[in-house]
Image 1 (cartoon, rainbow, N blue to C red):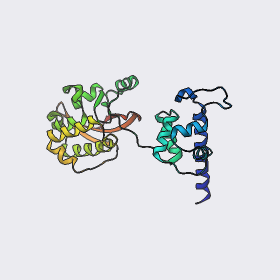
Image 2: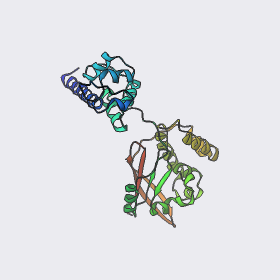
Image 3: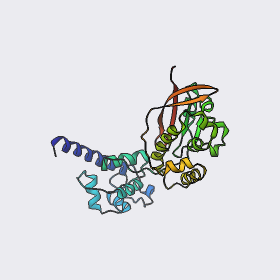
Image 4: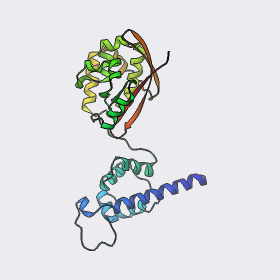
Amino acid sequence: MNKIVINKLKRTREELAAFLRAKREQLTPADVGLPSGNRRRTPGLRREEVAALAGVGLTWYTWLEQGRDIGVSAVFLDNLARVLKLDAAERRHLFLLAHERLPAEPGKTFCQVPPLVLRLMADLAPHPCYVLNLRWDVLAYNPPADQVFGFHRHSPAERNLLWMCFTDSQLRASLFDWETQAAQLLASFRRDYAHATKEADIQALISNLQKASPEFKLGWQQHDVQEPCQEVSAFLVDGNKLIFEHTSMTIDADRHLKLMVYAQQQQ
């Protein structure tokens, strides 16, 4: 192992040690259901209290907080994040410092669009844009997007981009080269699906689509996966062929919200 790598690992362990100490000292015994007592020489929780609550030995936890080179499991890090009352961002930071990789994020298929994003979508007109959650429900859209996709034709409960692509005959007719675009859409969806395979509503969507669309059922069995990227789609809108470049932007990583924005190509 070269000197640069050794120095990097040393700095990372020191950062982890400082992070754990800071978070431990920010908590009070009452925060974790322990009696306060009268004789505490240091602020926050004691190391032995954190170790006991996280289910590990005091010596082992002390070594971790001292920045020693010891291995830790994902299960322990999740327990430690729970004990230290870490939020989602702090939990990711803990995993990056301890494992140098992000933890597995639980999938969340339901969430609401922040008001600021709604204002941004209005300001983006005439560019079509809409917001998807992890299940690809269309949570919000602006009028130009409605003109292209016809979102208003579906109730909020059925306003799902994947469902519309495979079951909405009007949308299908408006898409040039529907077979190619539908296959790309499905391959992109599967990437998000991996975050929420245990969610009942996303499983219901897959089950219902396999019953409603033979093309979806066949495509789903192929297990194609596609990375998010800037793409080009062509639509027939009011008798005119419109070609759009489109891309996705994450607007809330914790809730898996993304904003889809379309920009019309110049003819």
